Length: 329
Ligand SMILES: Cc1cc2nc3c(=O)[nH]c(=O)nc-3n(C[C@H](O)[C@H](O)[C@H](O)COP(=O)(O)OP(=O)(O)OC[C@H]3O[C@@H](n4cnc5c(N)ncnc54)[C@H](O)[C@@H]3O)c2cc1C
Image 1 (spheres, rainbow, N blue to C red):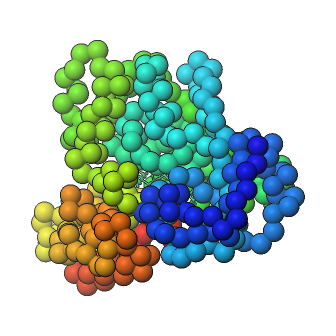
Image 2: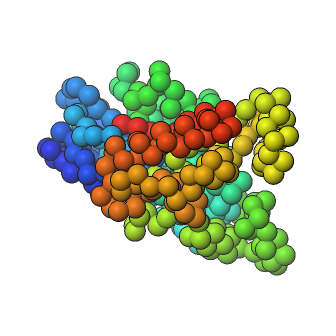
C-alpha cells in the first residue's frame, strides 16, 4: 500500500528532532509499490529510514520516501529482513532464538535497510560482517537486483550506496544476513570483557551488556535528540601520528586503512569542547562525539555552528580536520 501526505512534518522522523517539513511524504509497504511510485515521481526526492543519521538543515522541498516493508524470515541461520524493520527489533528476535552475530549492534537506532547502507558498527562488529546480499530497486533501470555483499564495497561506515554516483540510485528492499547457532561472542570491548568468564553465555546476555554500556554513555533518543556519533574517527598518516604522539603520549590510536585511526571523541575532549553549548545544542557530557539537541528547541543553525566550532578547535589544536558522519540534508 502506498500512503501519501503533503506538507509533512518531519519532527518525529528525525532523531535530532529538527522541526522541519517536506513538501511530500510517501510511505510504501511492498517492493512492488516502487515501480508504480517511480512512474509518477518527479522533482527532487530522497529515501529515509528512521532519520537517525541525518541532520535536516531546513525544510526539504521535494518528496521523501519511506519503506514500511516488514518481515523477518529464517532459513536455517540465514535470515531475510525487510528494509523497513527496526534493526533493534530484528536483533531482539535473533537473540531470543539463540542466534549469534547481531548482539553487539543492539540498541542502534534506525531501520534494517539503512543499516546496510551505513554499515553500522559497534563494539567490534559491523553489519557487513554478516550480510550475505542486499536486494535493491535500481531507480535508473527500474529493475530489482540482488547485490552480493562482496560487491557492496563495505568499509568503515561506508558502502557503495553512499558513493555520490550511486546516491539515490538504489533503494534497499531487503537484506540477507548469516547468523550462527554456535556461540561466537565478540567481547573485545572493555565494557563486555566480564562476559568472557561466563559459562553457557547467550546472545541475550551479551545484548543486555551492550544495552547497559550504551545507556551509560549515549543519550536516549526518546529523551534527548541526537544522531549518535556526529564525527568519523579520522585516519592520519603514520608519520603524522608519531609526531603527535611525542606531544601527546596518551593519545589513543589504532592501525587502520594504512594509517592511524584516532578516536574523534578524544580529540574533541582534549580540544576543550566537552559540554560546550551553542543555542539549544550541546556536546554531550558523557560522550563528546555526540552533539545533542539539549533544549529540545535547537535549530539546524545551532547544531551547525557547534559542529564548525568543534572542527575549528580540533584543527587548531591537532592539525586534524574532522569530517561529519551525520549526513546533512
Ligand atoms: C543515539 C544514537 C546512537 C547511534 N549509535 C550508532 C552506533 O553505535 N553505530 C552506528 O553505526 N550508528 C549509530 N547511530 C547512527 C544511526 O543509528 C545509523 O546510521 C542507522 O543505520 C541509521 O538508520 P536510519 O534508519 O535512521 O537511517 P536514516 O538516518 O534515515 O538514513 C541513513 C542513510 O540511509 C539511506 N537510506 C535509508 N533507508 C534506505 C533504503 N531502504 N534504501 C536505500 N537507502 C536508504 C538514507 O538516504 C541515508 O543516506 C546512532 C544514532 C543515534 C541517534
